Length: 252
Ligand SMILES: Cc1cc2nc3c(=O)[nH]c(=O)nc-3n(C[C@H](O)[C@H](O)[C@H](O)COP(=O)(O)O)c2cc1C
Ligand code: SF4
Ligand code: SF4
Image 1: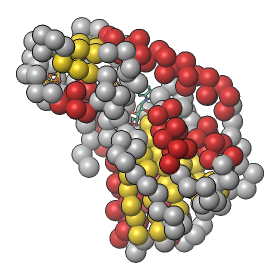
Image 2 (image 1 turned 90 degrees about the vertical axis):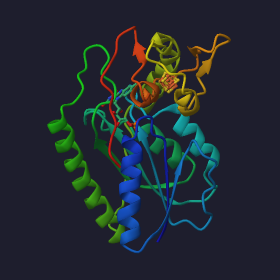
Image 3 (image 1 turned 120 degrees about the horizontal axis):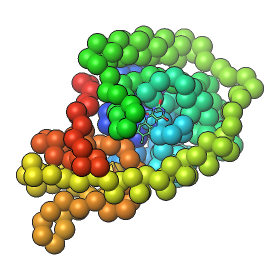
Image 4 (image 1 turned 180 degrees about the vertical axis):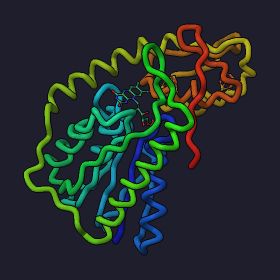
């Protein structure tokens, strides 16, 4: 089977899922191409299955993913699996908005998947997962992914009467969150540990980080709160509301 996987990932969790699926599907004799929406990608016209996924931000996948996918997918009825990664399974319907939009375009949604992954957002009341929790969460998700791979290979997936719950509310929340994120992003700052290596400038998916005229790191007002900058700075020099946080990363 020819499969294309398309994902957005702020801090690696959704990329981990995409890579895991890709590896297992290739090992079971499928032809797989995998794309991040941050690169130029073109979906193979001959593709049999699209797998599309990304993180949950405030109950929905990022607008950036939805817009990119709708812009780039071919106008043809293709089987499609949509997935999200989230810090819990409470948002099991977070993928519904994307599913509904693809369904409207004529795509055939054959599975909607939600994978619990370690938390990358622990400002305020949330806590970072412990190492033990992280291992347990990833083991459980790997098992869920193995089941999906098996079902894809056995052509066992089919959704009748797909129910997409509360999509209007979710889209409204997502829009509100996109606006809030721009303000929240102004709470980031680089401290004295910054070596001006420029990695955050290069890696920010929204080009929201620049060097100012004094060659200091400056955050603009285009943030999507993916938290990539804070977790990937080699000096852990990026603070949120002047507070330093433990960094999160996932081994691929
Ligand atoms: C701004 C923001 C909002 C989030 N909101 C939720 C949420 O509403 N529910 C949830 O379960 N996880 C939430 N998370 C956690 C992420 O969805 C989760 O860690 C995800 O796996 C991150 O994927 P990524 O590493 O591919 O970016 C949020 C994370 C961020 C950065
Ligand atoms: S990645 Fe960290 S050290 Fe490098 S420029 Fe950004 S804040 Fe400074
Ligand atoms: S500035 Fe905002 S959009 Fe850019 S990497 Fe940091 S959290 Fe993500």
